[in-house]
Length: 77
Image 1: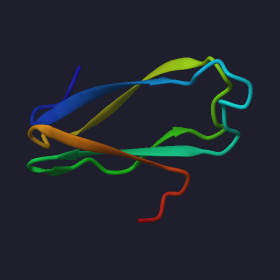
Image 2: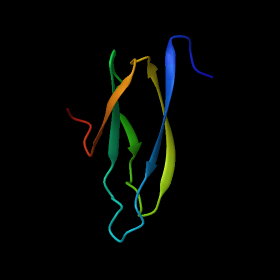
Image 3: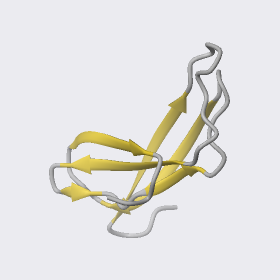
Image 4: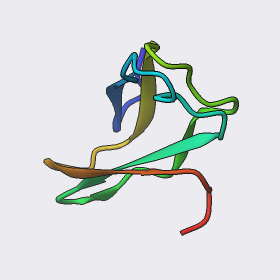
């Protein structure tokens, strides 16, 4: 159950099934909005295998309309 003033964003991560489509690196996500951005959140510490699908929830402040998503392999800006 979300806390008052908080929004839950659900992200589905899906890798292709081609050979080499996965990663062993940790992945981070940040959702960009018209009223601000979410904090960076680790999607996974161990990366993803080819053909994998996972749903991740990010809870944070309301960021307005979603304008974009940043995916990175580091927690630095």
